[in-house]
Length: 244
Image 1: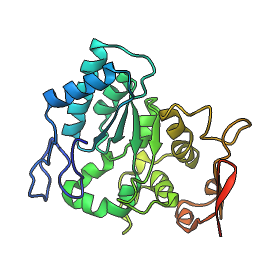
Image 2: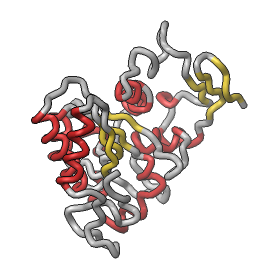
Image 3: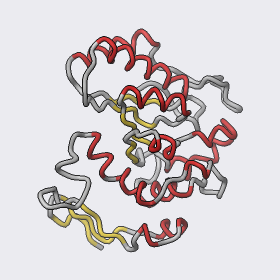
């Protein structure tokens, strides 16, 4: 866990916040300490996940992975960075080269984006740059980071295809992705990141019967209508665990 949040002005940034008592934010571990921890866990054969939001933080995390993988190359490690909020292209390039995967939380833009705009201005357009990341060939999953925001998937799905704040402010339409890509990020990408792509993530013979029945088809409606979507039923392992 390497830094704080954009809304709180505590994520580790290169540029000072427009409004924050913390200047460029906070870093919880310096390079030497993180590099040592990453190397130890990587060398032990485990999969690693690191929370990183600000670009200064992400630089430290990426450097740690670069050092660990240079010293001990490992195929199919599927190490992951959680959030990768300030997803500038040069940082995504480094992640791609290392074979890292990413879990992003674009729903932050809907619920928290107004505070992000206050703190970082137009740099919000680089937050959760899913289109750029996917175009570069990085496996990107999506999640709510509940309880930070409402965990209902409709908000994160909406944010992936629309990128508006709750007050309607634009957070960079060039990074919108298609609903098909958004659904993949919410299902198959996450399964891949946990080495479970042959067990779950899609509805296929032989896979776990994990699925939800929705009140509308997300691929068939306009983006704003997604916010009206409700869950009618949830099936987990073939058992109905929720039903209206």
